[in-house]
Image (cartoon, rainbow, N blue to C red; front, side):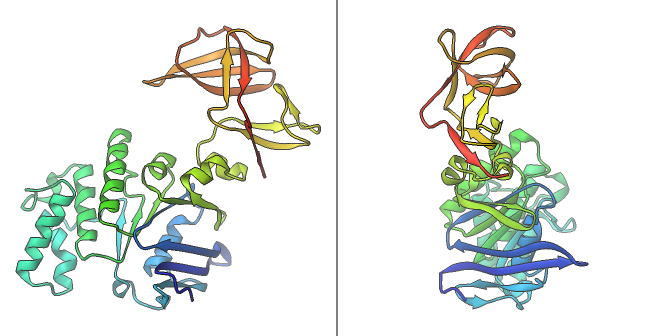
Length: 332
């Protein structure tokens, strides 16, 4: 068992009716670290979270905290907090009673409990909401109450299962940014599950991309973004300019490799000019994104997306330009 401080998952495997959902997961989360589990529906990320929480018994492997094996420990004895997408507030309790629930179960004295509730509500931006009924809350407010309830007992590890998934995009982006600041201010070890790469970028110290029940790539955001290693991970991260090379390593814009395969054109290394001797492309789309345009360029059988500070008329001809070291080799 690992002696590292924090969470250590080793060889975790989960099967349902002979179907392998998790296949030998090894994972560490340091105290104070925010790890994001990223992947599409069905990749195993929520099952992994439930296994860490003790809500799902693994078929093999171990879950430990500070070197202490918790694999057979009941969920309520792990001292882990859990926030779900539906926030699961108690409708018969007001906001303060919801936040105080875990403290009351733990036998925290009334006065200390009340002070902690006030502290938590202030922390999540809901000071003065204590006596409100939960059915008067907006979706974002309800999720903040759920977060306060999970944080109130001071969990060793906070786990969040797509907590912002039911909110609209603007609110989700704002809460993700607020949540990242809050968790870092608290130095709160956290595991956050999402299928949304923007949430991952807003929150993660490290990101683990899951697929087919395995960790396909893990590292800091900078590491994983710069070198996703595989087509699957590149797509999970939202990379757009993936190019299939022919037998000689070529494509419509030139030779980019030594043989067949898939490559990624690094973001920021692909551009265009009005003149020059490079590959010619036709502008087939120009979408305004607030602070810039995104151009859709076609050259031969390739369709590429290129950021631009200016809009270009659809139908215009431009010359593609490639910066230094523009290509990342990927495995299928």
